Amino acid sequence: MKENDAQSPLVQLTGIEKRYPGVRALDGVDFDVLPGEIHALAGENGAGKSTLMKILGGVIHPTAGEIAIRGQRVRMAGPRDALAHGISLVHQELVAAPMLSVTENILLGRLPQRYGRVDWSTAHRRSREVLDRLGVEISEKSPMNRLGLGQQQLVEIARALTRDTSVLVLDEASANLGQAELQTLYDVVRSLRADGVGIVYISHRLGEVLDLSDRVTVLKDGQLQKTVQTRSIDQEQLVTLMTGRELAVPKKSSPSADAATLLEVRNLSLRGGKGPISLSVKAGEIVGLAGLVGSGRTELARAIIGADPSQGCVLVHGELFRRRSPRRAKRRGIAYLPEDRKDQGLLLNRSIRENIGLASLKMRSRLGVIRSGWDSRNSEHHAAAVSLSAPNLSVQAGTLSGGNQQKVMIARWLAADPSVLILDEPTRGIDVGSKAEIYRLIHQLAESGRAILMISSEIEEILSLSNRVVVMRDRTIAAEFVGSDITEQAVTRAAIVDTNRPVGASQGAPAASTHKRTSEEHR
Image 1: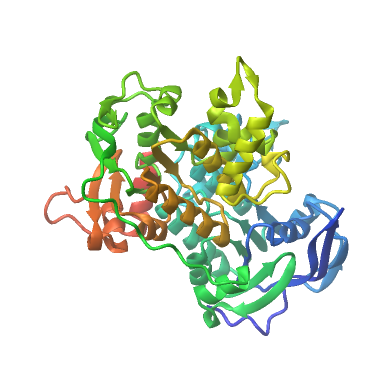
Image 2 (image 1 turned 60 degrees about the horizontal axis):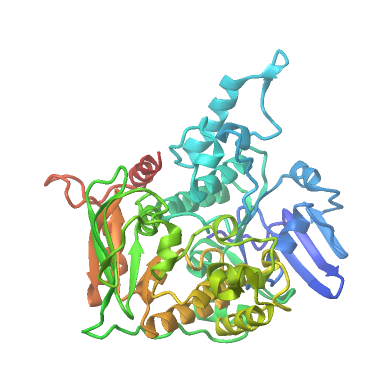
């Protein structure tokens, strides 16, 4: 950690206000970033973090307040001005051009020219250089729409690194990354800090906030709570500053010894997998599915519900699930919450009520006509069951915070009354307060006798919620842990280390080798 207190700020925001009709998003916030500093910005969804950074990036204009760059007062007319001042933003929402290549996305608007045409050789070389710096093995010529969310996020970061950046804003840049990709991101961030770049780091993963940052500023309801040296605060104190209350994860509940097996997978093979997969989930049990990005976790979930083809058997309530498809999975009582709620889970431009009712259309209608009175009562009941926070159920789902969007998807499946829930990254991009509420809901679902298969890239989440942990590697099961054997070291080692390697092979692969192996799994 650097002692930066005596240095002049690269950027300084003073008395920043942002008002919308009936809403004060920011109320007199002060914030600055020093050279060679990682300054974390923490707060729940809606606290004003992204709004403040959009003002710094010229995306929106403040209602009041001043911005100074290296001591000089400036007015950001737009994002181009921010870039000219050396400020680069990697937004929480991906802004990729999906039909263009990785190179075109990295050098968007800045493709090198030669004789009036794009110099593709130079463009691909520049892209390759920055991808190599990030330890990303994907092809620079690949279309963006063929990449996973984590890989797309790394391309967004690569784009920022190709600019002459003095202040880099990472707004939830780690939300879509797996463990190996996270380590790569941490290494790059620390390297940039050593080069004198100022980093603004926004993340709901409080552990990484405390591990990475030099200072942390906490916002709540658009107001500055406190700016402190990170070494002087712990996670519990940080949570209290953010939420105004202490949060506790519910205690694990265990299924009874004679609980019925509700979901069973037998000898299921994924494309490119190194072996068949067999697992089971009992009523009242939470089985955590861990592994690196690319290990096959999501592919397994999609194969179970029939969204992707696979070989093998799936049994629900002990009966063979034939001719699997997502529609038939719903009929058999299997609910699936995808990892990408915005593109795969919700109709963002439709109302909350319509989104909640998507999985229970037959119950909502009679002779093909929606029963509006019953529909409203049903939606309100399930919205209350998940403690949904919204002005009313007529507002568009896209206007909600990440945590409330996730609650809408859970409410949708509660209305369909499933017996098995497959949750893929249920708290990705969600603030700490909403996480605690989602955890409570997951526990309640398990205690009600449902079987839960939960995929998560957050090791703490896996450890705190799961009765059993199944670890995947190379699209097959690498290990399974239960009870006191569920430890961070055991789960991480099973996800990374190939225990079938010849005797005498290195057991502790260096970080660079791990990154490369994980990237090769993506290709």
